[in-house]
Image (cartoon, rainbow, N blue to C red; front, side, top):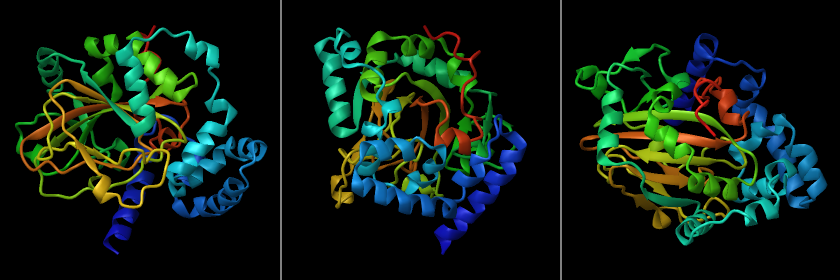
Amino acid sequence: MKIFLTQIKIYFRLLYNYQKIARKKSLYFYIYSMPIFGIPFFLVSKIILKIKNKYLTNFFFEMPIFKSAIRFLSGKERYYIANTLSSYNTLSNNALENIKLDEETTDKIKQLNKNGYCNLGKIFSDEECDNFIKSLENKNCFNSQTPMQSNGKIIKFQPRNNTFSNLPYYVFLPETSFSFFPIQKLLNDKKIKSIINSYLNFHWKIYCCMTWYNPETSENHYVHNLHRDTDDYRYLGLFIYWNKVTKSNGSTSFIPKSHKQDIDDLKNNEIFVECDKGTGILADLNAWHAGNKVLKGCRYVTNIRFGKDNTYASVVDGSVLTPTSEQLKFLN
């Protein structure tokens, strides 16, 4: 009952904020954000998935309306759909094979395909991390995991103020990240692009970017429980950890291989990704994963997502977290 009431509260916040702060509006928002609309499409989806006919899969799952059922699909089902849809497999084998990769990059691609995530290692220096954290001072943010689930009010980030210690999440908009030159440099790195291209296998866009500040808190949040994100059939998230993270201050946990197969025993397969300052993690968030409550200290992390430009998530978020072409003009 408590979870149900929480979801009702979130839904009404979504409705309120959608009218107030959404940058791009769509009728699909009302269909995607209300689970009951997805049930009939899920039932049809189960029939199509049982038949496993390539033509039917493409015909039905290319329809945007069928994304209303995505929250009910397993990782294995989403994996099958993504591998079958023509629009999710547009890069030719020759194009991928002609990319000359070093052994380390090839190994990252193998890890990502096998486990659903890979550790890129330290991609930013300690100085760059400190500078990014300092750059957040007095920047605009919202008091929730996403602006659409917040109270809708823009607040100035002042972490030494006691008001920033009573909620699990504060979120910054894309301009906060893309104005930082080291991030611009990273996103133009050929090795990073090669890993993303190899995994997604289509011409992707950056459809979401958010930076989170997570203070020490006693409050629980629904993302502290294992869950699958519902962005799309195939997409990737890049986590950039600006300070060291451990199990005590919000390390992300993953269930390896759950991006493409069903795992019965989640808890006994859960691993916690503890990272040094400046570490990057690429992950398929169709896999089971969880954020974790910050018990001591805080966490600063940026999450950049690569995929289609009109995902389930970007529609529900009203494109508030979708960077503008102006913000992305640095991309080669």
